[in-house]
Amino acid sequence: MNRLFGWFGAKNPDREMPAHSRENIPQHVAIIMDGNGRWAKSKGMPRIAGHRAGMKNVRTITMAANELGVKVLTLYAFSTENWKRPKEEVDFLMKLPQEFFPLEIDELKKNNVRIRMMGSKEGLPRHSLDAVEAAIEETKDNTGLILNFALNYGGRRELLLGIRRLAEHIRDGEITPDDISEQLFDSYLQSEGLPEPDLLIRTSGEVRISNFMLWQLAYTELWFTDVFWPEFSREHFFEAIRSYQGRARRYGKL
Ligand code: V07
Image (tube, rainbow, N blue to C red; front, side, top):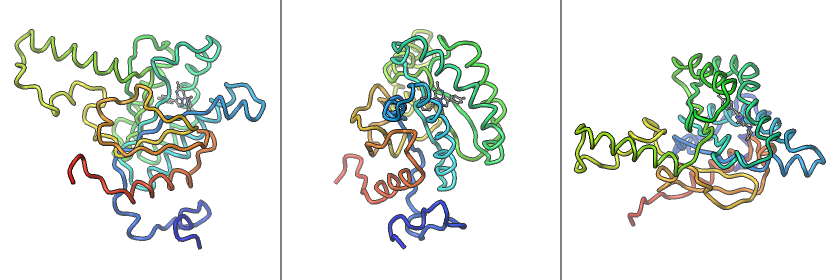
């Protein structure tokens, strides 16, 4: 058996992992799900077919993360910059939340998964927002993995919205400038209450952060892979986790 990955095999009935690999599981994994369009093009299919394949892969990776005991999985589904894409593609992407919901909600509930969202609700069409809000509501009492969708999300916008609200609270005398600590500032962000990502995965070969969780990624381990998102499998995910487990994190200390 392959000592590194053999026990991750999807065909292994009890999906056992050796003791050392059950330790040091990242609490929070964030993923930039890139390469859907390129994957489709490489197969001679339209970009939107890649987005649909990408949506199907959300289930695979959510279940893999849940099995490992990851507490939070944040998925970058739509950025504030994605509005610049052709209208036809944007319209299709905006239908994915409502397509995802009926397909996946039973499985998510069965697995005790709780859905959350980060990003601006303004600008999202009513039908997308209804699907997201229904998913959040239907899973709100679940206590397992938090599946956090970044939707119409931008890191700088998140920071500015938080700073604006903080300034209003100072103006209104609710807090003073001396009260501003990292912990207080965290509570003004859309990731409020979540631990910072321990591991960021970006698929499809780009080696950039692209305005994703700018404050929260300060000490996050980064994993980049050339694999397109629709082909990013359980085994690829476990490979990233193993790499994370092999790194010693220092947070600036020696
Ligand atoms: C989207 C599929 C995944 C690859 C990246 C881009 C395309 C799932 C959702 C979703 C969002 C909220 C929710 C339920 C599902 C989604 C968009 C794009 C806009 F509550 N996948 N996915 N939303 N893609």
